[in-house]
Image 1 (tube, one colour):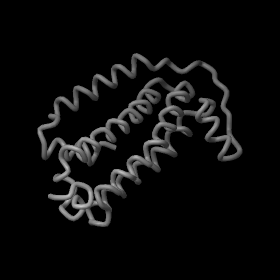
Image 2 (cartoon, helix red, strand yellow; image 1 turned 90 degrees about the vertical axis):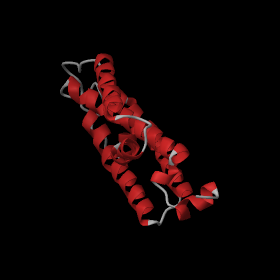
Image 3 (cartoon, rainbow, N blue to C red; image 1 turned 180 degrees about the vertical axis):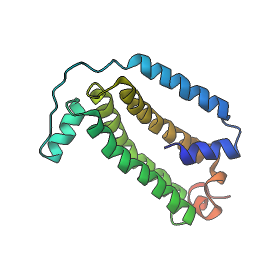
Image 4 (cartoon, rainbow, N blue to C red; image 1 turned 120 degrees about the horizontal axis):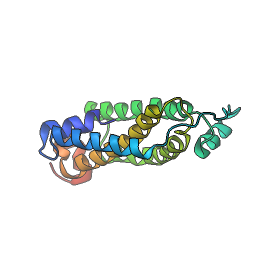
Length: 169
């Protein structure tokens, strides 16, 4: 998250400067630290037997934070890298690139709810803050990708990829 989108915007545009991105990151971290309660001294560990129970219990906040955070994180980031790789290779158009991001939005909403609800089930407060910060960063990454798609398509797409969407280069 944020590797390709933020790097492209910092390098090729004046949309955001490095110090502004750093200030937003520090402000979000401070805000999330103040909003995240410390984990309780005792909480019950529930281990789901099936995928259905895993999805339900992680959404309801019954599972450990690590079991709610890492599976989606390890699936979501390779999807973003794969989509960007296929785009650079020329096998994706601008419309298919944005379609994949829209498809990823619904699981991202689920992941955010699961992480925020399960953040009380971890060993230390800083792990909950980092997990919540990663979910906010995923939404920020989608927003920056939309900015690239809408306002700066020439830095990511070539003419063949843009012709179907925009009609010209």
